[in-house]
Image 1 (cartoon, rainbow, N blue to C red):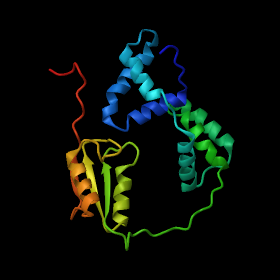
Image 2: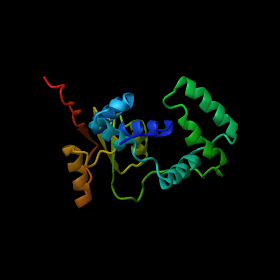
Image 3: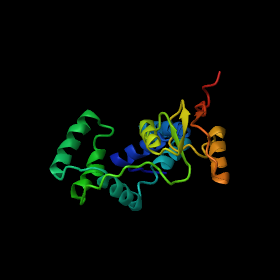
Image 4: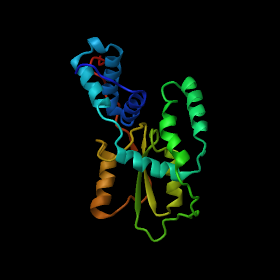
Length: 208
């Protein structure tokens, strides 16, 4: 890999996506080290850079993202507000502040219509199985607890001591056992369940 051009939003996005799962921490560290000294980066570091930053958000993802985000709540309809806000936040938070110009400004042009409030109870639905880790970086555990309280026939599997986003098929035997039973038989746990998170991987060379 020769010259590598990386924009600020691509950089932020690669870091954010890597933080979704602890198994990505080592490739992230390699990629950041490679970017620090690109001309002398190792093969492993350049491979990690390509893995994290070789692709960017697709148009289909962005269409889905804006359709949900811009319809969730009223947004300022003044584009200059987002330009000024992004400039201010970029100075205060240089690693993430500029992203709101890309991810918030489109909502200034989005036709927003306040939805009719709905009271969600889950009445009439079959058992619902929910999964969430206590330190999930994308979907907060507090939100999962609130949803669980509204859905009276739900069971919440809480993964403690970790923050991976996406718990099923994440090599956690406790979680996979509960979910596989639910998918194969339709049987949810009789009560809420707690599963410890997998231990963080130990980087090579750090073992005693």
